[in-house]
Amino acid sequence: AIREILTVPDPRLKQVSKPVEGGVTDDIRALMDDMLETMYDAPGIGLAAIQIGVPLRVIVMDLAREGEEPAPRYFVNPEILETIEEKKPYEEGCLSVPDIFDQVERSARCRIRYLDYDGKQVDEWAEDLYAVCIQHEMDHLEGTLFIDYLSRLKRDRAIDKVKKAKIRAIRED
Ligand SMILES: O=C(O)C[C@@H](Cc1ccccc1)C(=O)SCC(=O)c1ccccc1
Ligand SMILES: [Zn+2]
Image 1: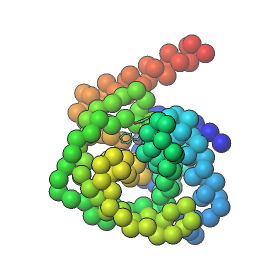
Image 2: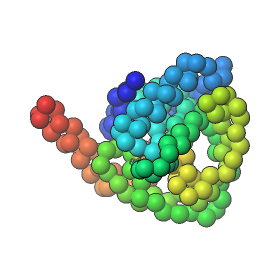
Image 3: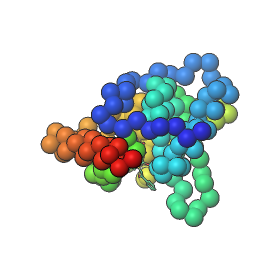
C-alpha cells in the first residue's frame, strides 16, 4: 500500500531508528513492499522506513532510470563498515524535503553490510549514485536530513518553503 511520506518539520524525522530484531520476517518484507510502492509513486530512488513513520533500520532503493528495468534493492540493519577519504559533491533531493535540491559532499565509495530481502547477509562496496544514495538513506536512520549539512540560512529557507507549499496545498483542496 502507498503510505504517507513525512515531511519537514515533522519531529519524527529526527528519531534514531532501531535495529530490526528477529531477522527478515514476512512482516518486514510487507513493510519493504509498501516502502517500495510508496517510493515509486513519489517518485524517488530511495526511501528509509522512518520517512513513512516506522522507526526501524530498513531502507529500499531503485537506481534504475526511466525506461530501464526496475532494480529494487532492500537493506535491513545496514551498516557502513568503511568509507574512503575522497569526497564528491552531488545535487541531492529528499522526499521529506520536497522540491528542494542542493549540493552535498559525501564519500565517493563506501563498504556496506546488510541483510537483503531473503535475510541473507551482503557485504559490498558502493560507488557513484549508489554511494550517494545509501549514505543519504543511512543518515535518515540517524535522524539526519541532507539539509542539516547546509548553512542555517539555507536550511531555514528550505523548511519555510516546504511549510508554505503545504499550506498552499491545503488551501487548494
Ligand atoms: O528522501 C529520500 O531518501 C529519497 C531521495 C533519495 C536521494 C536522491 C538524490 C540523492 C540522494 C538521495 C530521492 O529519491 S529525491 C527524488 C530524486 O532524487 C529522483 C526522483 C525521480 C527520479 C530520479 C531522482
Ligand atoms: Zn531523504
